[in-house]
Image 1 (cartoon, rainbow, N blue to C red):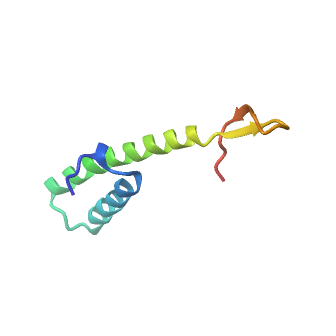
Image 2: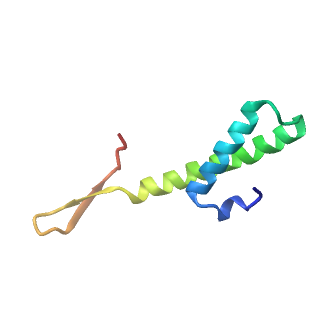
Length: 79
């Protein structure tokens, strides 16, 4: 797949990254192909991390007052 990384959804980027990891782990890629795969995989990993960071920032829990109005936010805690 050679779709520009910026155009991929998080899910598509993650799927492509998984395919790249599988290809690299298989040991069947030539050295040149492995280098190209690794470079694209690294860019995909960075893009996924960037998208996750942005999503985490948007998913901050909003505290509501008795009237249901936002009063403050607290950082999102995964887990």
